[in-house]
Image (cartoon, rainbow, N blue to C red; front, side):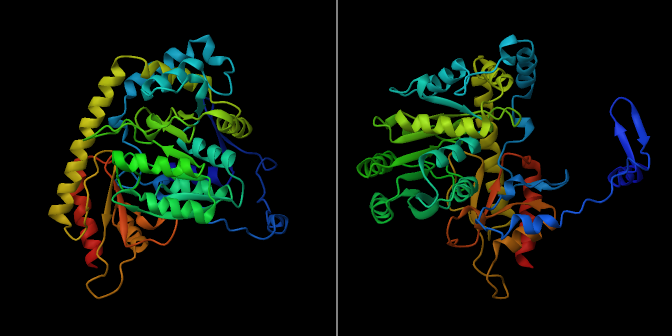
Length: 426
């Protein structure tokens, strides 16, 4: 019965009115099919930009083992605290008054205080609708179409997409021991004239790499020498498991680092709130880019976010989250070792949400392994993973997959590993 109702609703024969019931549409009210063929001529040639939306946004059925996403599951989030904060915010008159474009002052100050670094102030801070919005606005503000941006390879697919949508040319640079080598960065900046470098020094997505103190110093020195901006994506600031390194921004005293931190992955999927910290004219340009695209972030969301992170329970939640992530990371590593030893994780990530794994170069019959095919076959078998190819701004260096241990529970990891082993054996 429900399927039949769904079908006739889709055909426009009946309409549902919440709180009132279901009604048959009159003949005049039934919409005729819309002819959109004219749009082909109006839109003109397709300007392929190379923008690719990552599989982390894929929707899967409840019974699928979800190892592809980019967020922790609801059971790891402070849902009770968030609900209470949203309820309190709804009763706060200030949550219904348009905030400054830069954001609620108290929330901006919280981001600066939590960073724990000298030389940063609330006036340097801009509140954004999540980290992706911050990246997009920063790239648009600090570079023009046709300019070059340097990126680690592999790196976050959303940064690749944002750069390409802004019309930037990506100059990929390999990681040497987990970070761009200073000599390589120096050569690339000199050769391309790039003034923008996108990096993830802590718990890089997808690899989990963490830069050493020496690597941080050298990269910042090279960027300073070339007069370049370093866009630091501290997406996993709250997701340290074995270590809690300071952001690169903590060592910046010359306005070279533009620091981005999101709370979405540690607070709530519904409270998409992040911050950009930048100094000087760069901050002003980013603020203008944000104003054009977003005007401002919902004051209700900002008020609720500030409520949660300002309470003592926030630190307790982070400790519990980091403990649970350690359990899940180790459980997935153990399941792969026991059930799918052909899938190699060469380094245990000290934080974040992901394992970066290498597949066998060839199948048993001699064919080269294609991560996109493996990903599609795994999904058909009930396991959703992310193909490594979407994380490279240039040609992939081998067959990789990214496995997220934040969403699905550890009880399903052995089944997932067995399924992946079966797919690779076929």
